Amino acid sequence: MMFNLVVTRHQGLVEYLRELGLASDDTEVVSHATADTVEGSHVCGVLPHNLSCLTESFTEIPLELPQELRGKELTKEQVKLFAGKPVTYKVQKLVDFRICQFLSFTIGAIIGLFSAVILSLF
Image 1 (cartoon, rainbow, N blue to C red):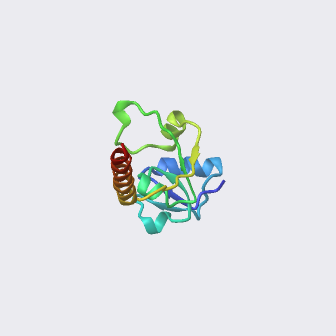
Image 2 (cartoon, rainbow, N blue to C red):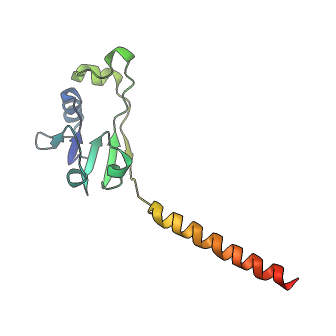
């Protein structure tokens, strides 16, 4: 699968993805994602859940980096050395938390009312 968008600060990762045939010279690359940039796209990179659920698919390249390389610019050779196999996700937002709160309160009230009616019969 070819990615529409790559979200990374590491040029080495972009070069690695191109070498694998997962990105082309025309693939958009951004260092920071927004809802507008990821929505409906096949994205590779690191995204928070509130953005990954907007994508068509989301792929990460797991990197098992040693502590001394974390937060540093990585070369393509370093990415190749520490990269795991790409893992693709389809993330879906299920419900709005406020709806869950409302349903929980409503169901609790109905159960309480039902219990009161049952107890009044005895």
